[in-house]
Amino acid sequence: MRSRSVVWILLLVNLALAALAALPIYNGILRFTGHSLMSRTPASRSSPNVLADFAFNCPGSLGRYAGVILWFGLLAIPVNSVLAGGVLARFLTPQQKYSTGDFFRNTRLYAWRMLWLMVVGLVCYWAIFRVVNQWLGHRADLWVQDWLSDRSVFWVKLGVTALVLLGLAFVNLALDYARVMLVSVEGTSVLEAFLASIGFSLGRFRRAVTVYALPSLGGVALLVVYRFIVPWSAINTTGAAGSLEQYREPLILALLFLGQQLIMFGRYWFRVATWASEWSFFASTRPQVPEDAPTA
Image 1 (spheres, one colour):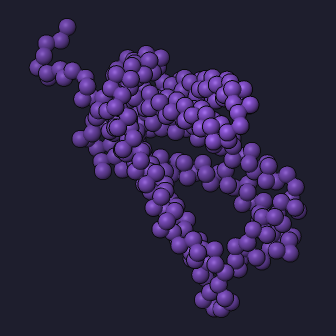
Image 2 (cartoon, one colour; image 1 turned 60 degrees about the vertical axis):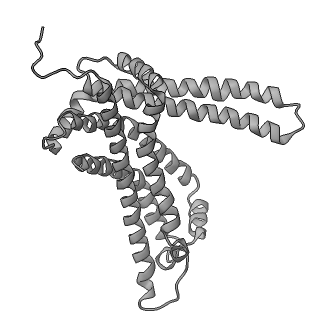
Image 3 (cartoon, rainbow, N blue to C red; image 1 turned 90 degrees about the vertical axis):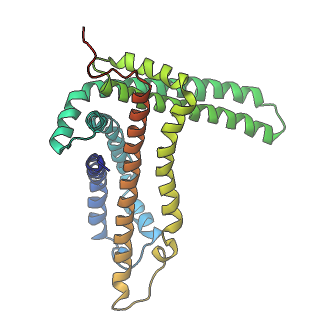
């Protein structure tokens, strides 16, 4: 609860990135609807024909917009890596008040180390895709190419996919503990923190994974709740014409947008809770130094 301010910062920064990514799409649709016979359709009901009409009359637009979204998605990686330093620094003094100014000062303090750690993580992700997904996947394809049992081929390929996912999850776990070490242990280098986090995660594998997984599963649970609670039938149903029906769909879409932001807020909350859990677990494994102990 004391860390809710950093959750708001994560949500608002990422919401701003999403809005910037959506801005050219929004402007393109506005220009299109002024010259299309289907311009009135979005005001009365949702229809996939609008998207088909847009793609036909504005060739290449969807591909360009996909490129914009890709670049903003790539931008979100270093942005969130840098913000992690400000979030984790919150746990250095959990009992004290933590202002927005403190957050951004700590973000600037740990920015370069977090960015270099991001580069290390990306290299590890690339290595997993290169070695496990491509090399091992190619070997598996050669191995099963003459098999007559589709079920056996499926299980072999599923095993390769599972190894890729497990490798990515472990790298993500190690990066989390490396971030904790960079902030909590003064003077730690990026490479030292990453290698130490691998040893820490392997040496306490069961507890490290549990501390990482339990809060993370809370974010997955939110998506499941969102999927089954939201009345999709009401959202996708076209209402009859009338004085009140014209407001029904805009109101439903507004409520849907609000619900989605609440889900994102909850997911960021669980992300901060995961870091807090890892911080607490890592701190519990370090030897406690008495406050009145003599210093060298």
